[in-house]
Image (cartoon, rainbow, N blue to C red):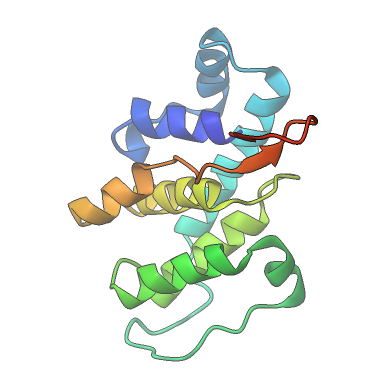
Length: 162
């Protein structure tokens, strides 16, 4: 589903350019995406549109309170993801309402292990929906989906890079 969200972001410069769900589903199908993934992505995008049009929870823009994550949020958003959200908020990219929208959309991701790369796509989509102007360096960071390489044992005692 993340691939579909990236495709939508790259294909439509602003949310109003994105076609209605039925037409979008046809375009995604023609682009080669699976029907189940398309349905999940369209449902997720509909939720994004719904939360973007809402002003709840009501949080003042200048609010300096600390966000305490609930158990399910802690389980879904690892330390790296929570740290990235805090970084975006501290740097002024996110206000408290934007932070809450990102957390809500992250929690709405169906059965996906949330890595930092996937969270960056969620942040990108929330900012896209809000039509926020984002600093070029932050945008570059959000568009970089390369995850850190990992080492694993290939079975014969030698390690290989992935």
